[in-house]
Image (tube, rainbow, N blue to C red; front, side, top):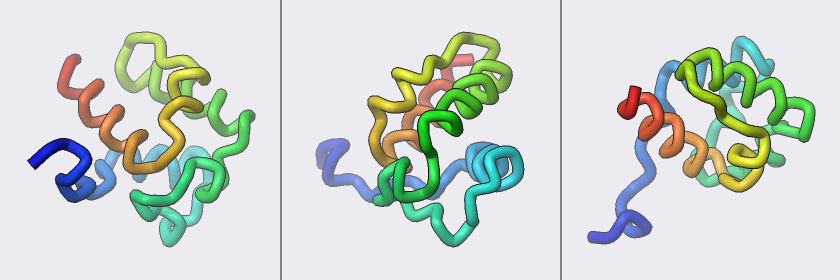
Length: 86
């Protein structure tokens, strides 16, 4: 089974906390297949999230990296892979 065929992992609890409590995203909007725009991440929120993730991981996460992810599923996979690196 390739990565694209595997089911999306559940949203990581720490990522969920950042989105809900720090960025005020409605928990019901956190569907892995949703686009980042659909869950309410505009360009300002992407900048805020890049700062939060940089603080979380201790390494820079840029707004461009976040923008390039497009979906919550991709953001979640990025979060999980980056958290496992540190």
